[in-house]
Structures are given as structure tokens and as C-alpha cells.
Image (cartoon, rainbow, N blue to C red; front, side, top):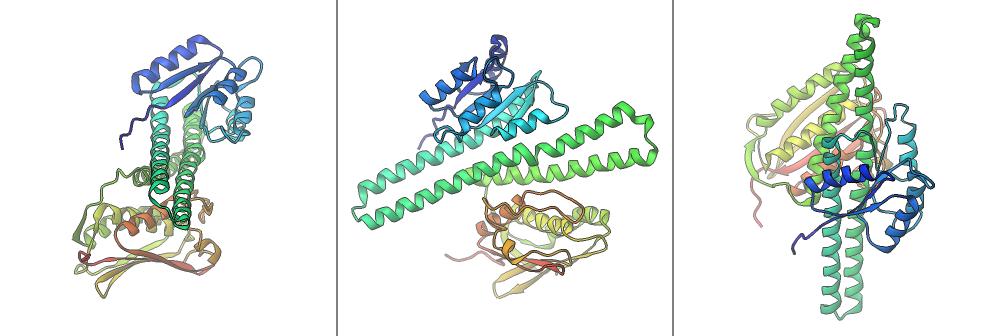
Length: 401
């Protein structure tokens, strides 16, 4: 099946020069069908007449503004899933951003447009829109084939139900992705920009200890955002089938030593003791990069939900022809209800850490997908107030089919 995907992008602005600027920038970087509109009324007419994949919407327009136009689009079932990126004036108070999100927008960019920022955002959105397009195309072809080949009505209905569940999962993945971009990835950058602006404008008015505290906050926020971005990119690759799976047999300590050294910095900042007990004789057969990502996420998650002065322990043992790797903490624990939701993409169970650390829950979902890919299992034992143990089981040697 060829990926002949050329998205339909609607550019909305009441100033022709702004439309020309956006059109020129997009045409230089993307193959897309560009449609233009200069008013909210014209936008509503266009989206009712033809399918639109993405809207770049100016906010300040005569008559119906961009926010009202977006609300009307979102209130119509046929157009409610169209991603909308608002483009308008600088918004230091974040009030326009809040109105944009409330109106159903996925993102908010300020004028004058930063070309690199717009291109980067469009690449992310269009990658997922293309993935949804290909999934829908695949499902349509699958459904047609099922209708043609399966005469048994019960079998046909069952297969169609499976297809619908796949489509629902694809839509949940897209919504989760857009939610992270619109909220969880944007907010840390707002914090970094705000603190750095204070230091630039009023550096000498702050005492040295407060200057250092600002810088430490910027560093911590940047590190957390980088880890989120790593997970986001890796998860996105799993959804589009672009991540490479290359299992090999390797000594487990060849990756755990570096991971522990990396996480010890975060643990030390919270006065948490991190220990590891893994024999150098333990081998595993798995994709090295995936297991590295899994263990890094599990340890950082343990740091997040363990109070200052707590303990985290990483261990491994052989069991039959498998290896069990466990991350144990004496943190705040997880309720039984939330344990059952941790690996569900459309279940919102993200919570703040013991020092207010934010998260999306995406790391654990990524862990589950990577462990499944490596023919393993992941399980959780937890008691509220007493701590948690996350255990992954992966093969010691290559598995025979």
C-alpha cells in the first residue's frame, strides 16, 4: 500500500500578506494542498464542503474571531477532530492560550512567526495525521476484504469489531499525542522562559542564593522536559512502525551501571539512596536500546514517587530461562484501581511526584510496549504509603518459535 498522503491544510487570516507568508513557508518544506480563508464564515463553509486535515487559524479577525470559529467547528461531529493551531499576538499573560485550548485548539503560536518553530510543530502534527490516514486507509481496505471474503455473518461482525477497536486505539493515541504537545510539553517551556526572562531583566536585584535557585529550577525543568521528549519521540516511533527491533544477547550490567549513574543525580537531589545488586554473570536476550529505555523510566519513576530520605533498589535474578529485573522503592505507592489503568493509553492516571514533579504516564505505556516487543512481561506490586515494586521479565536467550 503506497503512502500517497498529501494533507489538506487550511490557512486562515484576514490579511493577505500573512497568508502569503505562511503559504510560502509551508510550500518550501511540505507537499500539501493549501486552502485559504479570510473569515470565520468562510472557514465554516470550507470545512463543510471538503475534508481538512489541519487548520492554521488567526485569532483576531473582523466579525467572527478565531476562537468562536473553532468552537463551532468542534461542536460539529463531522469536523470536531480537525486539529487547530492558533496564530496570534504575543500572549504574556497566557489568557489567549487558555482561551484557545478551551475553544478546542491543539496549539498556540505567536506573531511574528518563528519559521523553525512552525516547521517543527507542523512536522510533528503531520506525522501523526499521516499515521492516522494510513491506519484509516488500511482499515478501510481490511473491511472491504472481509466483506468480500467472509460469508459467515458472525465472523464478519467479529472482524469489523476488531477493526473498530484498532481505529479507536489509533484515535486515542493521536489524542494523547496532541494533548502532550498542547499541555505537558508547552508548560515546562513557559516556566523556563519565564525564569530566564527574570534573570535577564533583573539579575542584579536578586541575591546570589535566589539566582542559583532560579538556575537550578531551569536545569531541573529542562532535564524533565528532555526526558518527556525522549519518551514522546520513542513512543511516536512505535506507533508509526519506524522503531527498529534488534535483539541480541548481552550482559545486563553493561547497561545498568550507566543507567544507575545517570539516575543517581536525580535521586541525590531528593536525598534518596539508590542501590543496585546485579550479578555480572546475568545475560539477557533483548533489544538493548529498548531495555535501556525501560529501566531508565522505571528508576526515574521511582525517584519521582519516593520522598526525600527514601530508598530505591535495582536487582535481577535468573528464573528458569528468563531473567527478572525489579525496581523497588519505599515511596507513596499506587492504589489498586490505578494499577489497572497504568498501561491504558486513554486512561488519565498521570499524577504529581512527592515534590510536585509533573508527568504524563507515557513512560510506563512505553515500557509496556517495549517489554511486550521483547517477549517479556511487566507486573506491579504496590501498597499505598509503603512503596512499589516494578518487575520486568525478559528472556535469557533467544526463544525458539
